[in-house]
Image 1 (cartoon, one colour):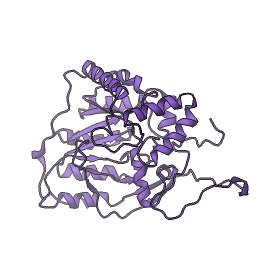
Image 2: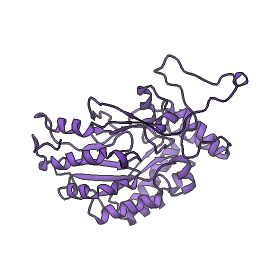
Image 3: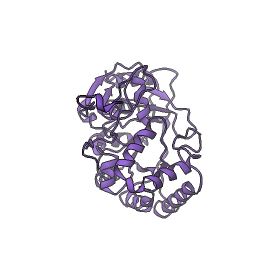
Image 4: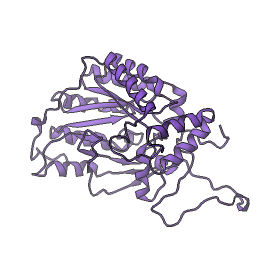
Length: 350
């Protein structure tokens, strides 16, 4: 590994932003008195958001709305599809995504405003659909907790996905929602290999902590499942049976998966990371990712982009299906009870 490798960060480069007319590069190193260094320290930006609910029209996803209290994510997962959205804010999808975090302080108020609309009908909302709602800054700002309070007040269904054990801080609210079948929690577990996890997801909870989180939620009667995602051939695909067995043993009721795809700037970011961390198997991993997406790492085709196609993808899906059948037989998430929604609301929380 190179001496100037930024430990604790996933991306090691700052990619170009296609929305900006100008950008700076170190094109002629010999003409610089000192290197153009990136600032790896976390910076917080406040946004007065205009809306918080996002309609999701993708046929690949099983939910209709998502909401994201944060833009950018300190977890620094190298493969994260959300990196590209940081470019809309004038930042890069690389280091900026995990070091420049945008906080939407008014998200709870915006959520309540939507639920109070006479035209709103209760449908499960994904929290979050883009960046992790329990990323490190949530410990300070508690925006996700405030949003859960709104949902609990109106008895509205919600689905949560996170890599962070901080979700247990809100166990009281999750138990309250679970009592009326209004919540599903999914913990994302990518690998059991801690060396790989630290390189690929540098600021996330360890796999041991994530399984402990699954176990705690299950014992508290909060419906919990896992997402074994993304599956990256040549890096973590062989771990599928072990991950699903451990999840089931710790009380998970369901398991899902997606394969890796590297759209937009993520392709360059992942390629740089893979060359620096796994030079001995770069060609194998890169070529197998391409084989799942029509010869490219970039894939926007519905139906294929998240599941892949071809021999490598088929082998992954067969292994996942066999493992799920073995370890999750007879298990299922409870159905949401949409009748509990207090249409028109109760007293405002704000």
